[in-house]
Length: 483
RNA sequence: CGAGGUGUAGCGCAGUUUGGUAGCGCACAUGGUUUGGGACCAUGGGGCCGGAGGUUCGAAUCCUCUCACCUCGACCA
Image (cartoon, rainbow, N blue to C red; front, side):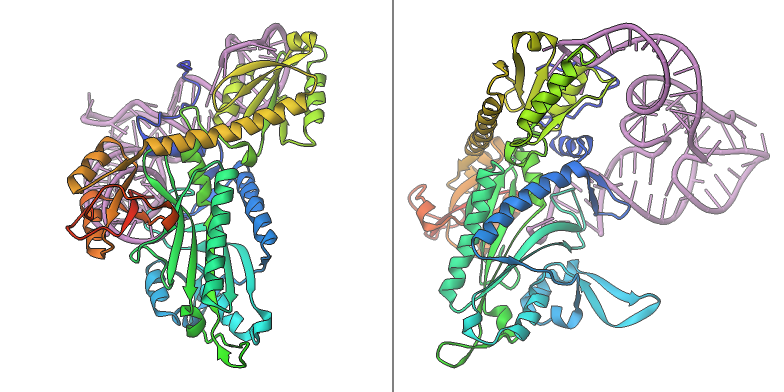
């Protein structure tokens, strides 16, 4: 695996040596993003955007299968609307960007650039909803939102990010709860099956929940450096917003009622997760299902008779089912191309040269293991298909193994600090449920409660007490440092 | 917002201590030889040194201010 020291080649910093630098190197050298002229705002380049489009379509498909429709609301929200739900304003106030002028003229009322759209959407739902017959409302929008962040990192925390936000209304609290859980499930399903990122799911603590929610549920992934990434949240908003926005309808008993409300979102942050979960010292490793290029065909000795023709012939045999690229650029050696596409995380490299053509075979190299095999050109589509599936599965398995290796159990604070220091990652511990303890742990260890697993995934780790105090422990929770 | 760091060609850097008007590698362009793990030769184009002010005969280099970006903390998807 040793890389040649070559001064004209841009190297990626080793992730062991300097993880943040590794991340910055990877995202810029693979041309996923670039920094824009405005602080905190990133340009998503074609290769990065292609990944987003694939993530988007995987989620969008499931949203639609579960009855949701897409819509679009304006970017700007009047200040008066923003202020209607008290907790919500308070939570978002510090990071809202405001439009104050139209041309040279000062506006009568400031307009918020949406940090999230609950308020404006509720204001419209209030106009539209009259009867229980219209419920449930199952709507979603794909858009970007702006939150004026102090420190930013591409994909993980930017002042503008792309996401989807679902906003639904229901007749009953139970129905809203079912919806909230259904969407969390879909989030996890796509994250695990498509992005190959194993998730820990559960409920947020009161301290960590969304501003204005009854309850927030989350999926959390563990990165290579042992930090957790909140990867998607689903909120049961109860009637906080529907009351604040006076959304009423005539219910089955012919009485005016407030509906129950949910919202849920995933964002371009997922791309950051994919990079940090699967990546290695050679760069990106993309799960086949969201790789913009699944197979890159590299002709070897492409000037020789028949090589390029064969490469294109193979491309045609594969491109009905898979995303294929033939790298026939002259002037770059095959070796250079191997390294380039490895860095960009393409799952399979197909090498085809005179020798292969003579033998009716080609070489397949997989990105996840580096393994190279010679395979027959007959049934190449089938061979490639199987290998892509294998890679997809292997990436999930590897990520799960990594997470398990980086998950420890702690019985008390000293134990906690020791484990965290020795093996940064998730710390499972029992918790009494008090905010004081939650804050104390945070202060002393720098970790927060990432989630409280659901009952069916609860464990009794050890007999007795809260990790932080003498009270009896109510729940097992996951702690970690987080992005 | 607190601490540290960096701004010189598209990218990576040298030059700054000891001021004299900008250099290297890669990339790019053209021609040729190459091609199974980051090829080579030749020729060529491209920067006023983040910005402003000051000191000086003269500033990338010294001084002052400022801006941007990166990293680490505190806060948040």
